Amino acid sequence: MSIETTLHFFCGKMAAGKSTLANALAKKHNAVLLREDSWLSQLYPDEITDIPGYVKYSGRLRNILSEHIQSLLSHGVSVVLDFPGNTVMQRSWFRAIYKQVNVSHVLHFIEVSDDICKQQLNERNKHKPVGTAFTSAEEFDEITKYFEAPSDKEGFNIIRY
Image (cartoon, rainbow, N blue to C red):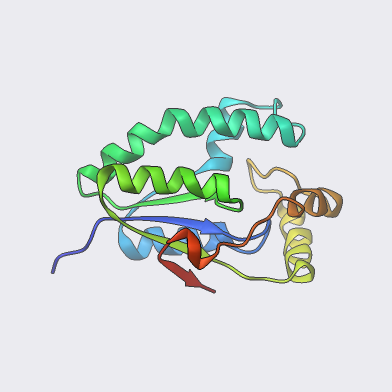
């Protein structure tokens, strides 16, 4: 049985369930799982305190990891990227990766209401996983202002949840 090498990535508001789905997909597809929150919390502890800081350090991380992700994919290893693809610009990074190495891709789009996300955010805050950033309802509202749902015009293979 041949398994197609695939890049899996996500779109969904904060606390929509992207990381939970990423875990499940990595196990299901025997894929390498890369988590932005883990990398950022280890590389830049206490340096990301606001949205501009996140954008700065996330951009650095993406630049450094792009070649590594492409190498994994070009060697037949599927990759699950637990990085947000919540804006057109963020999703363009994923496109550049899979197009460069000519592999399959899936954008997993989790459509959840703000109220459910906030409920899940409150639950997550009770346990505060390592690397969790932007945890207040106010920060949720601030981040959500930038959210752009994917459109069919972007040309992704989208699975909606």
